[in-house]
Length: 154
Image (cartoon, rainbow, N blue to C red; front, side):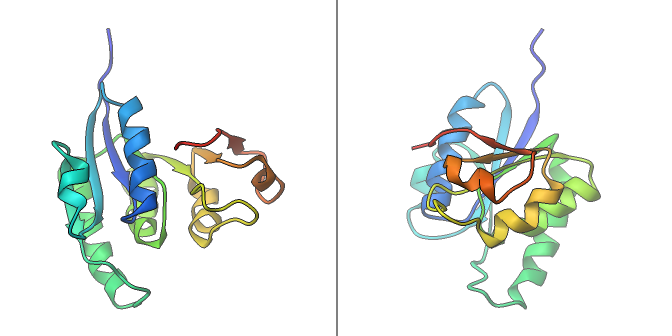
């Protein structure tokens, strides 16, 4: 018997989303939905996946209040078993709220662009993550024992 889990995959647009789509391919036997911000090509990239959009925060701290409210709405509606994040900062609110308030498991994969130093998002989410992957072995020097080398997604 295969247990289907509900999985929220959250990422910023662009390269983070490309990596998230690679992860989604491996999780195809589960119910997946995405949470990202809208840019023109996203609908094509996400195909038939269910998706929730919010605005790009563009490092505007006030935009994060909208992301927090949208995250709560999504978590209440979807109740994901697992949240998978590939970063960046856009994903922090739903990841932390999902973990602490809604008891979702959190899996974080550091972006492949982070070769020599950890991202801010990775540093923030590391303590909350149930599984934490880096795509470059060098980054294991910066994180604790929880970090695992997973190789490149792309």
